[in-house]
Image (cartoon, one colour):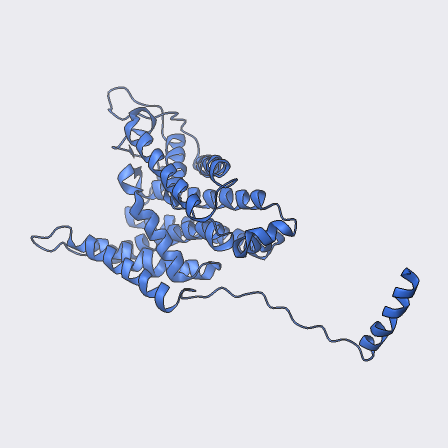
Length: 340
């Protein structure tokens, strides 16, 4: 019973983490139309920075090399990881958002992700290269002294609270004037500029906020796994986040939640625990990727708006009092005469 409970709690943690990833991408792509094809890179930046902020100083002879090692409390490490991801998104936005749109923007983000992957993997002194960080302290684990299953339940609650806060912030942004400006830019950037919207500033805001969300998800990831290496944030992980948003429905956060459950948890994470087929050790992972790809294709073909479609804003006619149109018609000649 304890094994099953721990398994379900583990899937719940990944569900909450992928929700945060999907919220961040939804702010960028669903709200504003920014094609961020390296979204998982900001997860890695947030996770790595929180990791080196939580870890103690580098120990000689341990063969694990990293910068900082500040031994900071976990709330401070969370802020550092989120801020680092947001700062990286700001730098990328300065390069990509001012002059590039659509396909060219997507190519630049993909290239930037490849550069970051290569730098972190080959610079052993940053985050121990391709070996990655290990032994990252978990929040309150040493204080609570819980069993592994009990701590997983505690972490599930912590991730759920952080996810709920991210949901609240994403919903507030969607319903705010900033959110309406984002959606206007998504629908037609040129028209939004013609109406006086500062499109670069709005797109940059969406880019940074989305990266902060993804960075928070990265912090939770490295805390839960207690390790992070480049093999865990490759292009396939970005594809999973995109697939979750496309299947669930972009432009609304409920769709992001539905997509995270269907793609990230049901197909991507739950299938990792299936037994390997004798003689074909990698067959399960390949079938998993084929299932996710097929689900995305079917969604785009039969229901491109996703499982939960975005609710468009509706404008209702305001009833006029009787005789208002007649009074307005009579006032037109009078206004013309006074103008002449």
